[in-house]
Image (cartoon, rainbow, N blue to C red; front, side):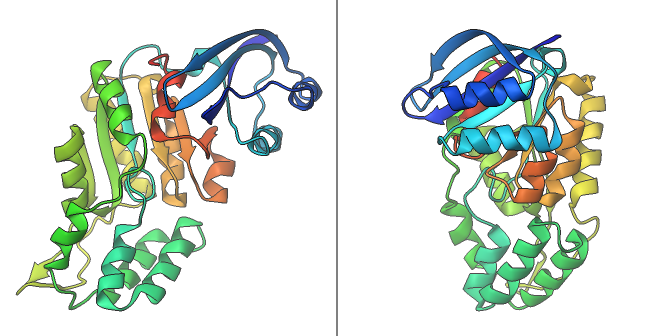
Length: 294
């Protein structure tokens, strides 16, 4: 039987490995051999060494849902696939690094929020082609006063744990990138504040002080995110195993599946179901204990 690592993580007090969870592990052929406690001031976790076969698909979702009923995130990993050293960590931006979808906030300022947000939500759920939906949303922003961009940029609602996560990753030597279907002014601001090494995002065309709504290809969709991850990995001479990819939407699934540690973060159901790992209750810096950095 394979030795696996399993984390139960939650904000605040230590999670409990109760009888219900132990029974569930047993039904999936997992046997706990040792338990280690940890905390970082924001989360507490149990790191379990278990024997068995890595649960996937419905089995993994079932275990995660049971942990969720107790307010915990559950992450199960084969140690042979986890990063062994610092490499490349890539992140979606909207609803991952920040607590909003910027295109929806632009639409709010332009009086077309309902139309744009409904398209955004459907695209993130994987119900609409991302490029087609992006083009429709951009068309609705035609004529937006470009002055509103600075106001949104300067008051971005940062996802809890972002500063601590970046501090931990950078101190350990990780290269970091934002791969965003959003826009450069906002991703560039996060890069300035937190030291991301690379940014891939869409351009906002402004003519005579107004957003034109014109889309300049390539639109950063799931395929562009994946190819950007692969390109950066090759440029940095980093193995696939030494990569992390984190996102919440359907367009993040390709890069999540291509990473050594691919994680859905506070994600839409489709993304959470497809991703090998997910965090739904924890802050962004809950990634650090998974890497042995906390």
